[in-house]
Image (cartoon, rainbow, N blue to C red; front, top):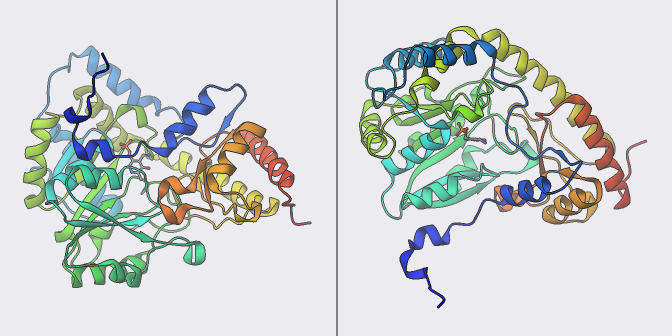
Length: 395
Ligand code: PMP
């Protein structure tokens, strides 16, 4: 007898769309000889001293739960880091929560602030998790579209146009996934004016803060009048090459902290003890490694942007993260067709832009967090592919 599970399942959960990125991973994984520019993670292994500190902590038997908010020693390191690096001051005792990646931090932030029907502005193209996490928390995601005209940077005016009486918060991610665009301090000041005027909260995803190449990264929490209304999210995955460790953190005014901590203690208890000990080492002693990874990404960014433009795919120069977001309109293909045909014809995996929101249609996301040799080969194959579609390199 066929049993229907429909009535068992949550309506909200049923309505969630599976991530469009996964489909290409699965397809690429089933083929041989594929060069993947699809994954959003560093190609570096975590610096050795972090691994060593974690191994040592296991040898010493640090296998118990920690405080719900995380080890105080780590929270103290996080506050030093935020102060020294970005000039924002938090109290380790009642303003920092150590989370399972930035992913859990985003989830906690939305659960803590949203009531049914509250609207959250999401600057698109955007990381795929934001809208589903808003929906899971009972909110309504509202897209604010950006375009390459101004390097995919959101403007104060675009934000103002999207605000309604239901708007509660805005999610900002700079440097951005998938476009790599990064707001300068002056641009953030303009955006902050609208946010203050309309009394919104900012959920600021700063996971790529360490990967900014041309300008000093500025946290929106450091801008006048914004600290009180910002939930700052960061983590170790990208800058410290620690994706698999699953460690991130939240920094916010105590009023947000208390509510988020309540949810965190029931859903998660705490982040893993030994991983937190590795993170202490990351913040204390690995700046040279972080710097050298940043320099390596910068070199690759420069090469990839230049080559894409040469072969006929328009590509703005992103200020941070490790993605480029070239236009594929010259080929006449949709971004889905482009990604599918490129994979089948030339065995290069990229992500079609539409998975990051409607305004991503006409673009593809390529990660350059892979070796120079692989990038060179991938771009050669891409050139051959677009020539087969009638697009030729500038001579
Ligand atoms: N935010 C953005 C913008 C991301 O790109 C990612 C990872 N791809 C995350 C958050 C999640 O990071 P974490 O590994 O810390 O959960």
